[in-house]
Structures are given as structure tokens and as C-alpha cells.
Image (cartoon, rainbow, N blue to C red; front, top):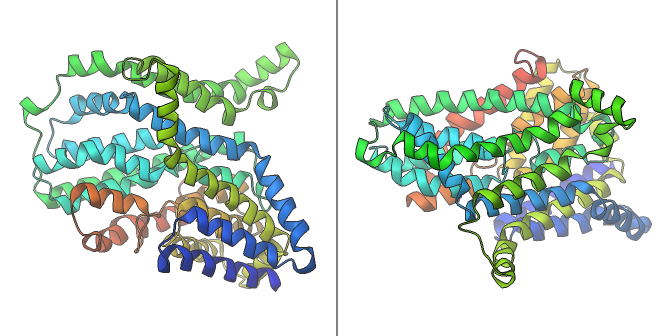
Length: 445
């Protein structure tokens, strides 16, 4: 059981480094990788180099970094602000409209950016003061923004998804193109959950509609922001070209397997960056030096994410060489549980690990094993992946919580401790339930 021991030590090192020593998760994943490699004994050097090389040459590591940069660029270009204003004009006139805009905007931004802290910062900076003007108390506003940030994990092309499909454990069982639509369906179930929670919190808060004078005119907001909807076209185009009937027609015409020749992982962020540059050209730099400054200022945002994903991949690869997947799967199989109970156990393990770690680190540490266990129990591979990704989206919802919670509370100026009970009650526990229902097939994906 050397692999299970390696996993235990790996988790303890990461948790202590991030919580006790208050160091960033990128450093923790680097240290965890070294620990995992060390459990290969005399072959530690070879196994470690092989694991790191596989991670360095993986297309998914590139994709994660470029997606984060894309989100930063769209924020600086003012594209996201125009999208939020359009949503405000459409639904801001109803009671608690600011909270619904926050939820819908988080879902829209999450489907593009996927970084939970970035979603909380971008949406929260606009909607938390707006919710306060609508008589929603600041603690509730921070709770809504932090809880909504997790939707970035439950839509296609998040870093957590990339860690999963690129893992040595279950990656060979998952085709990224076949996972897109099920994960989109899972994301929509999570959007529905967030809308129900928002309605409950709005009703309890005594919120009111946004004053007409503080609400953008629909005609103005539409004129300024309708083109931001092209971002969703940019996401859809590579997906449509590489899946379904259109891909088959193009493949027959060109004599090439389109899903192999055109990589959605590569082209989606490229297309969205081009659209963002066109839409936000008035706010973006006009000289090479200014562009260099913009790229440099973005480095702290995607630098840690890039290091985290790189060494999450490397650490997962190193753990795989210890025999961990087979050992942990054997232990879970030995439980002889029905699918719903096994899904619940997997969900509780993933959520417990997600409390101190990011969703990306959680997926690398235990998510892949959870997916493998569910597949072994007869759950279809894509369904198992969607369920575990839903579990892992609890980064901000379980004390001590992740970066999105502290970002939201910092904007609102409230003590994070005041949000813990509601985050658990309204977000973490329902998400576990949604994941279990997806795993057993009661919520179709």
C-alpha cells in the first residue's frame, strides 16, 4: 500500500504548506511532487523526471495558462463590464435584480474564464456594491459572489477538467470532445441550483429593485454590449467544428479526422483573445512597450496557476507510478457499496480535500481516483467525470475556504467567518447532492 501512503503524505505536505505556513499553492504542489517522486525509492529520479517531462509536454498545461491570460485580457479590455451592464439592463429592474445579475454573470464568465478567484473579483467588484445599494447586506452579497464563483469549474475547459482528462489514471478513458456536452449539462444543473439559492437569499435579505436612475437603459446597454455575446460564438465555433454531424461532413470532405486536426483546447482561447482584442481595442495598449507592460502585469495571475497545474500534473503522474490508482481503487471496490453510497463517499472525500486546497489541486490529488472508482462501479466515464468536477467546485464553500471566498469578503469588507455556515448550507451540501444525483443518473448529463 505504498501508493496510499504516498497519497497521504502528499496531502499532508500540501495542506500544511498552504494552511499552517500560509504559503501559496504553487509552492505546495512543487513540494508535493518531490514527495510523491521520492516514494518511488531508488527509481525516484527517473520516475520524477518522467512525470515532469510528461507534464511539460502536455497541451493541457498550455491551455490552462492561456485561458487565464484570456480572462485577464477580457477584464482589462472592459468586455466583461459591458456584458454585466447588458444583463443589468435586462433584469436589474426586479427585486434583488443585482443578485440575479451577479449569478447569471458569474455563470457566463465562468463558462469562459474558469478561474474562481478571477470570477469573484470581476463580478464582485461590480455587483457587491450594487447589491448593497439594493439593500442586500454585505455578508449575503459576499456569500452569493463566492458561491457563484464555483461555476467556473462546472463548465467545459476549466483547469480542473484539464487535470482530469490529462491524468495518467483516467485520461485514457476520457475523450475531451465526448466530455464537453455532458459537462455543459452538469454546469447548467449547477446554474439552476445557484438561481434557487439566490432567490432564497434575496427573499431573506429584504432586497429591492435597482433604482431606475442607477440602471443602464436597455437600448444603451444593448448598443454598447451586444457584441460581447460574440464570446459565446467563439466558444461554440471550435466545438461545433470538432463534434457531431458538421465534424463528420468536414472529415469526409477533407479526408481528415477533424477532432484530431483541430484542437478545441488550443483554438478556443485563441479565438476569444482575438474577439476580446477587437471588442476592447479602445482600452487596450497601442504600442509594443504598453503591450509588454500588460502581459507583465498579468504574470502574477497566471504564473501561480501555471505552476500549480504543471506540478499538479507532475505530482499526479508521480503518484501513478507508485501504484496508487490500483491500490485506491481496490480499497474503494472492497467497500462493496451501491453506486449512490460510493458517489457520496467520493464526494465527501473530494469536498474535504477541497476545503484547504484549490479545485485544481483537489482534482489532481483525489479527483482522478474518485472518477476511477465510479467507473469501476459501472458509472459511464463522462458521467463520473462530471459528478467529480461538481464535487470539486466547492473550493470556496467549505471552511477554511479558498481564494474566491476571501476575494468576495475583501470586496464586501466582511469577516469570512460570518459566511461559513451559509456557504456550507446553501452551496457545499447541495453540490454534493447534485453530484450524487448525476452519478446515479437521476440528473441526466
